[in-house]
Image (tube, rainbow, N blue to C red; front, side):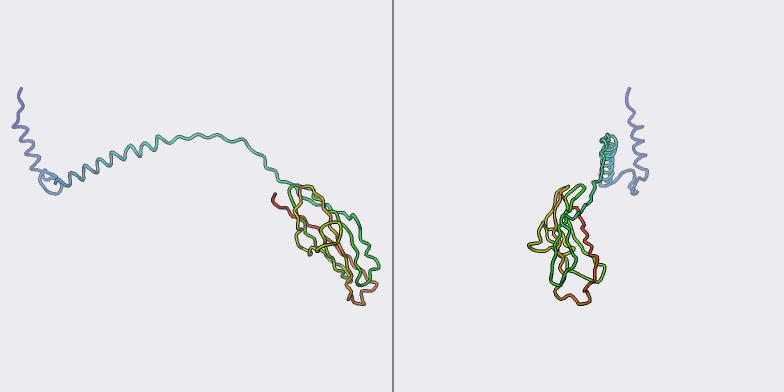
Length: 188
């Protein structure tokens, strides 16, 4: 059994005679053949990478047990430990009273004091941290210098002074003087 080389040669000759890409007979220029091979190699090389990403993506999940979140409470109670007698005051006189401030909630806190008047007479009001009206007064609206623990009680001395230069038309008059204590929470 011999191989018929004449048939094979005829087939190769026909292929070479057909115009190929770029009009160069049946031959592809050597540079184009290299470019085609490179594209085929790149396409085949990228195939496992893109396919691999799809079958390598696994996931699993498990819920964590729930946690209850509850906000704390925050409140204040005040009471006079020593109530000031503000009757029959004369210009230049001062009277003191002591207020207990108690925190009734959670967290640390500081206090702020304010005063409001209703009526003709306007005594000056000064606030002193502690049970006595000594040292430096805390201006109305300013925060206390100290931060207090949860549930703590502190004292504030409140001094009422009828100014020495009070006008004569204040004689025999009265006023309601309201002191308000505001607590503010502070980070622990």
